[in-house]
Image 1 (cartoon, rainbow, N blue to C red):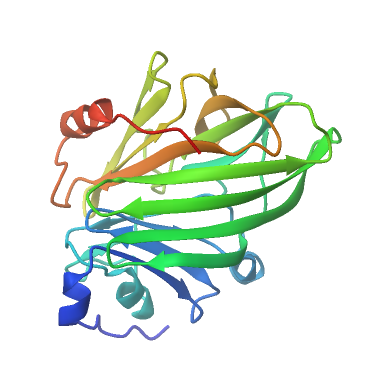
Image 2: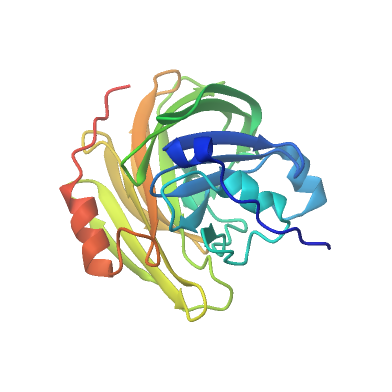
Length: 280
């Protein structure tokens, strides 16, 4: 595959602190970022082009305060560091940074990739959009679909996610929100810290000697918290959800070669300081 050079940011791009882009040149990858961190989700088109593909959330390390993902992805070489950051976190079939599923019978039942994106704000101060996830089976017990809003203002490492799940059964659900266990090939497990009192989990990943370390965290509403779990791919935090009723959680990431968190202790301290709003 031919790789193209990274185009430098324009003056206008360098003023922006948040951005959203749909990469129609690469199977509809949906990219959003702010001045600190960068994320991606995948469309249905990628499922057949590059299986296995999942509805997990990808995170990219970045070291600049302006948007870079769209320019980086256009190089065809997004896994290399061209000076502004890179993508070396591999979601695979896991939940990545804050993807979800339905926890039923000790198993996580997950949707296919996103459909019907709607961008409310593509920057420059906030990235804000919604997507749908079409109905998926939860064993033979029920079917579930989802609409999810993603909001990432400038100045934070956390995307605020507002999810509305619908089901053909009215009874409550247990939702598992995950952090992938092994997003770096062949690497050992990172370190997970579970905070039951404040209903959050914080992860500091294994280190790639050439590319550094990714970190992640998920925060849910303590009033809905239902415990922790894990499966082969993910560390999970569980919450109780009512179909049709929106709920809010926050998922964040960091890179130790960015400008903000060089150590696990610094990342943990930042997560501990968060006072998220869980009102839909």
